[in-house]
Image 1 (tube, rainbow over the protein chains, first blue to last red):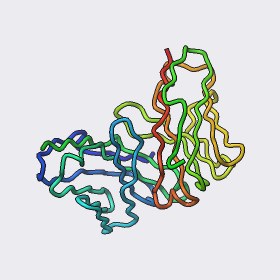
Image 2 (image 1 turned 180 degrees about the vertical axis):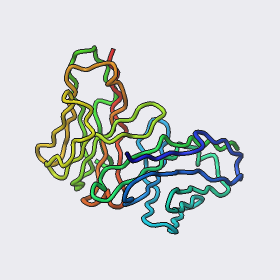
Image 3 (image 1 turned 135 degrees about the vertical axis):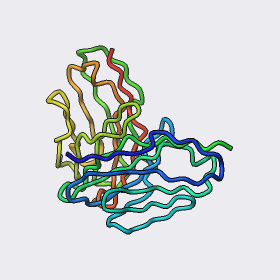
Image 4 (image 1 turned 30 degrees about the vertical axis):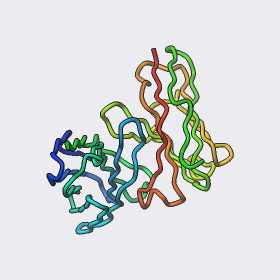
Length: 111
Length: 116
């Protein structure tokens, strides 16, 4: 069974304090690894897709990386508006329309 | 509309009643997905359509759950004889065809179902 595990469950940072979120996955025949951001009361919002080990994607203060077993979302010099739940998801080849999500990491950035 | 629209946003029903949840996807998006999200959890796949064809319904929990998309646009998720364990946020998402390859799904704000 495909599994996606995120850690930590919650992370509290001071503004400007860089850190990383972890997503480990057990997916046979990984097709893609995805990161989403979810604000309270809203639906998930797409951030990145990674397809192969060694790949990196960047957007503003966020950078996502992928290895054969895990993905990291690095947050550099975060701001309070980066506070949200960050969800990791994976799909497998042959049923790549079906995303298996982790439980998410709740990030709080204090001013 | 500009985004995926779901209705009702909130539904409270009594155990045993049937409920219908509606999803209006982004115009031009041929793929439509239903997910269920419990509090503190990530979304869980329920079913998937390309145009009007239901391609995969393996995530539907049991035969009380069904979904349709008769004209390839608006979709309805129906839960018959609701039970308390059905209480959750039901989220619809849409994408361009092949959108799942890129992982770029556009989610609606969801329909929160509470079964008393």
